[in-house]
Length: 284
Image (cartoon, rainbow, N blue to C red):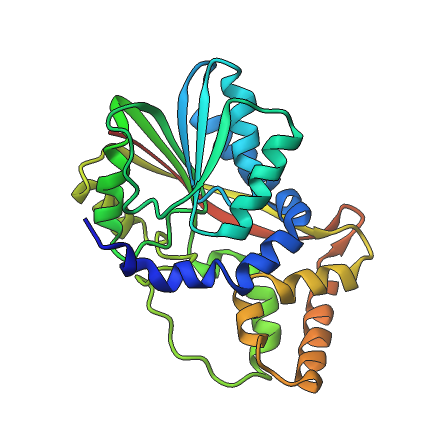
């Protein structure tokens, strides 16, 4: 199994600027991902009384939803490497009065799971960040009993996700060239290549692996709220990292370019761009 420090860069990132952003925008991110969360939950089909592990649970939206579905006789363990995001999740669990859910700060790649105990391993965008994905998925499989199942949501390729590319394309002409991204490096698109993902899970010992494509609208803001949509698009994700150290004048120029691009997607239903994911299912 990999040493915990293999994921040190991700641990540092999700405990610094990313944690501030994701806790600040928690309600808006929950709303943005709600259609994708509903798809993943329905596909996972958590049942009353089940034991569930939620990998990369973030600020807790999926933990709360899973706990509601398994009921008082079930249990949900949320894992995340971000202390601030886990703290927000715990606050929400307490506020909801739940006794069947808890959140632990831990790297799921090396977490010492109780062996062969869980019914379902669930993740909404939490399994794309492993330095050694095969070893990580071997460890995750150990958490399930022999009939246990996996259901993960992961982003499909960048080109198929306008909610990422439209703001990026609007900004990149004004920003310094970025080094080419390694498609296999830990990050949002590490499981985008279906052949690679199937290979990772097969090498890790999973069975009956199926990837299903789903395309859904990602609603940045209500109709006419270009400023709110622009703030969100420039504060979350890859563009936020690119803008982190630019001067205020350049930042303002980029924001205007992004606002102009998003204006083309404003409609009475809101400011929405398409997102594309894989739902990845497998058996232990």
